[in-house]
Image 1 (cartoon, rainbow over the protein chains, first blue to last red):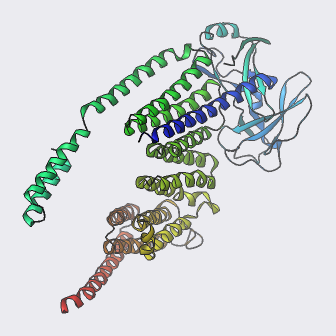
Image 2 (cartoon, rainbow over the protein chains, first blue to last red):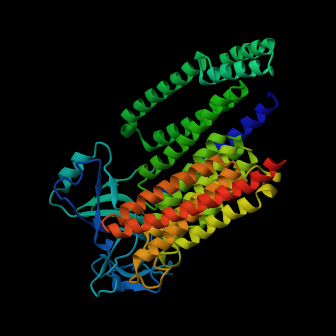
Image 3 (cartoon, rainbow over the protein chains, first blue to last red):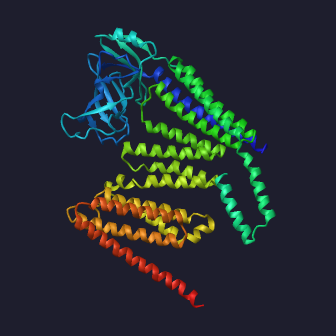
Amino acid sequence: MTLLAPRTARALALLALIQTGVLAVMVFDRTRLLTSGREITLPIIPVDPRDLFRGEYVELGYAVGRVPARLLEGAPPSPNAPFYVTLEKAQDGTWTPAKLTRDKPQEAGPDRIVLKGRSRFGRLALNAGDADAVHSVRYGIEQYFVPQGEGPRLEALARDKKLAALIAVDGSGNAAIKGILIDGRLQYEEPLL
Amino acid sequence: MSWYRSKLERDLKRWQAAGWVTADGAGAIRKDLDQTKSAFAAAPVLAVLGAVLFGFAVMSFVAAHWTGMSKLARLALLIATLWACYGGAAVLFQRQLAAFAHAAVLGGIAVYGASIMLIAQMYHMEGNPADAVLLWALGALLAAVLVSSPAALAASFVLLSVWGAWERMGSESALYSFLVPWTGAALTAAWLRWRPGLHLAALTLVLWIVPLGFLVWGHHAHWLVVLIGGAVAAVAAVCGSAIDRHFQLSAALFSYGLAVTYAGLFILQFLDDGRWLLGSSDSAPVLRLLLLAILALVLLLGAMVWALNSDNRPALWLAYTAFALEIFTLYVRTFGSLLNTSLFFLVAALIVSALAWLAYRLHRSKTAPEAAT
């Protein structure tokens, strides 16, 4: 029995180490995305403009979350699997969806960026054949947890103003909210740790 | 008096009366039982209660202060709790309190899962929530392997099932990749020589196989489920003694095969429209249901006879339950068209009677030579 104990202790230490490692990789991946990801600014479509920062978290809407079905290039993505939306920057600086693909396209240049998305309803719109069908896409930047104590300040600032989210995008298309802009000025930046 | 003690008292009196156990022997057995009883004493129970209460105190404290903490403080707290659980387990193993140590390991797995969810929430990671459950299940499996922990293995089977069901709901695919971690967990159960773990493995596999018909080959492939279950049950029945020479598994295999077969037949009869059987669905759905019901009842009766002959009680109860479910569902489904209902029960009665007569003949031919000697 006493012979077994040190081995068990070592096994437990290894277990704790591996599980801690998994958690550390999760955090590291995210902080790397926030620090070194390419930044784009996307205007927020207010869902309920009056009490945006009142609650614990808000659901943010984006114009790029509505992707016309005719933009699909190649095979349609499988249900529940992520797919890629290429955004294109217009003259006035706004980003709009340019194409939707199952696999990650090779896009370069300052006017194009690829975001990994998932369908809001698990699969793409059923009426995808219609000319005006629209896919509802989530990029993982739709939930915003209002930082503690910042709600009333942001709420007062945001009244009747233009809101936008500063988004960090990494090379694989993962996106994260980096900060909130009100009338073009960065008012809150997400802390890393 | 405990349940075991009262049963033993009854048995001891019977054994003593039969002359198998002497009065001294019975006294020694009673004395032994009195001594082993002290293993279940108040101290460990109170210790567990204390640990649970302590846990609740910590949880309420954290819940009250969580939103006020910085991300770094939260991460430090999660990881410190994780290490405290496994460190506590190491100390308990050293003190030879294995049961408490395994409880601490299970606590560590719970903290690991909670940490995954909380970190995902802290950093607003949406992604695919099922992936987080898979990550948790793999962590539990790792704990089961490293610490030889049955409780951790049970947790990983439950989590794998949750992951499988969730992922299937979203992807609407068969999710064959489920078999990879499942095989790992099943092998771990075999390696630990933990029989309930093997049952859990079988159960999670049954839960994976039964909905398969909805997910492959045009979403009506339930006959595939029937065939898989039937094949398993048939192999267990035919090669039973060969299997049991290596591992005592054939009886359990037969029961699981029976469960899968009947689940597939149930889906074919009542949940799916069974259009594979008679081509286009406009041709007499009643006839189709009737044919399937006869097949189901004959198979169930066959399973009952087999279970009776091989003394397989779980399979017998399973077959009884399935039979009752079959009759009840048929009755509910055909209710309203009385003619069909009566016709069906007439057919069912004829089949059961015929089988009863057959069983009686078999029984008589088996006992007749013995009576002659």
